[in-house]
Amino acid sequence: MASIMPADGSAQKKITITASLFMGLAHIVHLKDYAKGVFFALTEVLFLAFSPFIVHKLVELVTLGSPQPDLPIKQRGNSIFMLIDGILLLAVIAIFIVTYVLSVRSAQSSYAEYCRKKSFRSFKESANGVFGSAFPVLGLAPSFLMILIFVLVPLLFSASVAFTNYSAPSNIPPNNTVDWVGFENFTTLLGGETSWSAGFARVASWTLIWAFAATITCYFGGLLVAVLLKESKIRFAPAFRIIFILPYAVPAVVSMLVWKNLLNGTFGTVNRTLMALGLIDEVIPWLGHPALAQFTVVMVNLWAGFGYFMLLTMGTMTAVSQDLFEAARIDGANKFQVLRRITLPLVLYQTMPLIIMSFTHNINNFGAIFFLTGGNPTVADSTTTSAGGTDILVTWIYKLTITLLKYNYASVIAVMIFIVLAPFAIFNFSRTKAYKEGEV
Image (cartoon, rainbow, N blue to C red; front, side):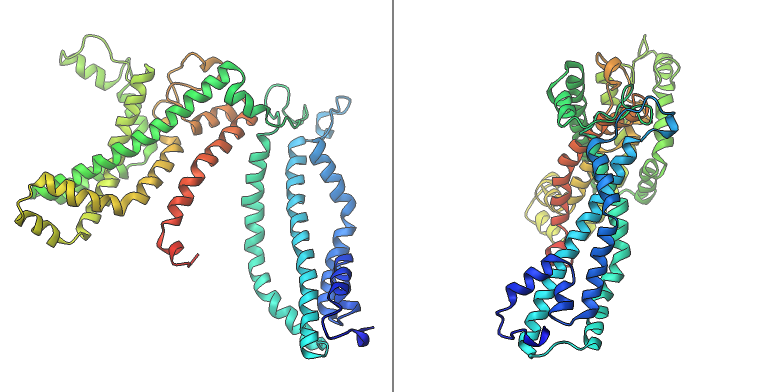
């Protein structure tokens, strides 16, 4: 059959149809490329052998099981395991489809080579070609599988939960099943029940305000201290730099817990000291009033984080040519004009990607909020939503999953955070030198 294969390219359609019918069939029947043909054929045989198991798992993915009240709990199907298994099998099917496409393209490529050489590959050439092309694939396969299993599948699982009713008290496996509910959770949080939608709008708004305020205060606080240390030319500037970086060097958990006790409304050192000095008559609810607690967490975060930006901006200012400052002074510019016209624009240009990174970090800054206030104080919707006055989205996710077992709502919030943060991450990555020069 191979001897009558035309070498003028007229059998291209025949090769494509045969390769599409079964993986490796065209390689074996028409092209005598047995090494590749056997490899592709074994791949499809294995897939067909496991097809009953795959179909069963896909059906479970669609239905997520059915109630089995007559069975003991340990023998009931677990909807979450069905969801994970189904996503894993979808990944396997995607790999199989890619391999199928590659087999068809390989057949077309082998036929084009046959037309060019007017002869088939020998078995040795075919085997060498398979092992040569397979070497980079085999080298990258472990990394690819790890990314698939430990990155892509968990991400898809987390996003999939947003479209189910996986929540207490009625849909926690294995006692109960989980069902697909479409966009119902999104509707509830973004405009459905009043308490949940109001709570989401409040927490989301405060998260953006917190991220913006925490980033701006730390950045310009650090910049101000760096400029003062540089321009004042004090004798012990290195000692001050060490002192100012100490809050950043101490673990945030320790710092926040210490401040939590210092600012306690009943027995906190701050209130007792102010009362002893006669400055106040009643305790100030630093962490007990929603608006004052939000202001307090921003200030404590400034204390803990300005040292990082102080070092960052000092390093950037050191890299600026001193000729610019000298020329400005000769032209009669005062220190404020030098800061406004030269220092600030150059430092902002150099550190803008880091400011964006800091903004995205603060949106997920779990420790600064949770260890200082625990998300408290409570507000009107806290009884239903469990979200306090200083909770940001990430700390609310923690409460929804650990306290309320509302995994579906937590997943919706995680998806929303991803939608908001992804553009910032892409923008920041696109500004890196490695991306612009095409190294990644």
